[in-house]
Image (cartoon, rainbow, N blue to C red; front, side, top):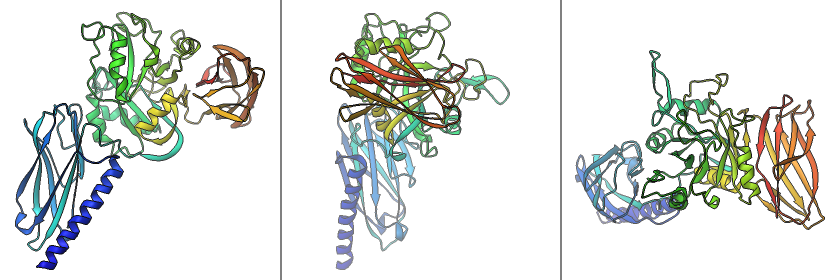
Length: 491
């Protein structure tokens, strides 16, 4: 008996140490609460509540649970209750779950996180009479649980679509009987996976209700990163807030949100990316507030990106490229991205103006396929836009001076009179041409070999001691825009 008790204590200690080490590795920080206990034969087919206090102001609760004895068929079911009642039951199918006002792990209900006494609910469907086992529950508040592990590790160019809609706003498609109905979120995600994309952000108008569905689907779509987002839709412009799910008051012009600057300042600590959408679209009854017309003008230091290609608007008067280049010339370092603005995932690219998912594609050089890494790549400007969503076209642009080389989104400080050596690495653009653009003007056009799939183009510029920005476009033999590159900045 003493040996069993000692073995139980040793097992409990090892379990707790390993579990905490595992938790800190997964979450990046110690838990706010830890609940530990024993499981014995007398617990067979009984229930237990483990109370814990949640402080005021908490927006999310994350629980991670471990227990010993699986090899002896010990089984523990999990649930959660708050001051306002039952919040879910996952049985034995999850060791980690989260609940918040906007989203929750499947099996659990999203809703307000009230301060006060909560309880982790345990059920014991099977515990052998001789068992002496241990459990540990670790609990984090707010977002101290850290990001989910990446879907793929390693730096690479990842392809995605950052603008699309579904039944949670105005996305629609044909039902089984051919009627036009709100289009299920699943069809959008399924189409993106079929297109071979690495990530998407579903950006419904002024809501993140779709985040719960994305959380449910992410384990199944384990090669496609599902990033929550919303299109902040106002009477004076639209913009995507990509990443955060916290509530945001979008009502610009209301007393609580007097202007866009107030709104942008309120979201800047949420660790997302804000992009201005289709900035030169006309506003009117067909598309209320679609054009970017903030009053007063915004502080562009609060803006991380501009949607320079929306659906099929490249090479049209509605292209966002001139607007973006105007901001670059005014000294703002803002990243060019693209978005399909898809509202029907069943439409094909041949449908006029459809904006098929993945066309355009935003291609991001990121350290991993994870939301933090993708957003960091966008903020850093390590991005090009594949206008047609070809999937095989690649663009890398770098500039070097005095032994230092930088890529898109980075700055170089060449001495006046020195040479800036530029290099463009390309794939899948045979027969096209490279446009070298300095401060918004095409200063050089370089033809591409029609017989080579992979090519490297080199050219140089002379530094004059003043600030400039330098980037490249790639056009096809028919003159259509294929690729949009982000700048290198010359200080």
